[in-house]
Every structure is written in C-alpha cells, then in structure tokens.
Image 1 (cartoon, rainbow, N blue to C red):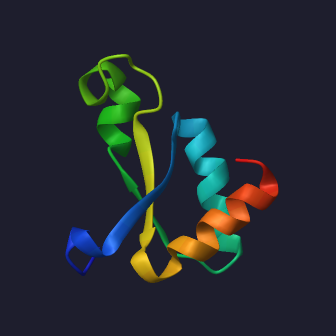
Image 2: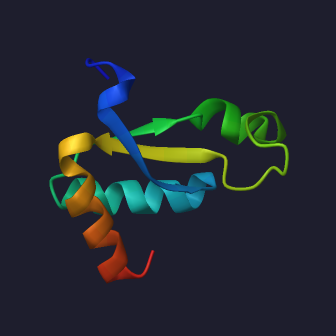
Length: 77
C-alpha cells in the first residue's frame, strides 16, 4: 500500500481460503485488494483475533468500497 492506510477500507474478513477466493473475485472485477493480518492470521489466528475466527481482512481503496460491497452482495458474501 503506497498511500496511508486511512485510504483503505475493509470489505471482507475470513479464513485464508475464504479471503483468497473473495480477493480473486474482486481483482477479476478490476478492484485492487490488499490483505491485512495474512501471515499472523494464518500462522497464529488467536493472536489476531482472540476467538481465532475470521482474522484475515481484505482492504480496498476508499474510492472502490461501494463497488466492492455491491459486487460482494450480488454474490452473496
């Protein structure tokens, strides 16, 4: 991420498999995505989230948030 993290918004969180599927879908629609807590969420999910569930987050640029959310709603995520 070249800009400050304030310009990025979370659109999805889940385990590594879910996140990779959703990230691939969004990128196929032309939306750049970044993963937050990918390494820690995969190796030590209880460190990122005490419950150990849904620790990895997908972030998109603030300007893409509406389109990303709309696409995910269409697909049922």
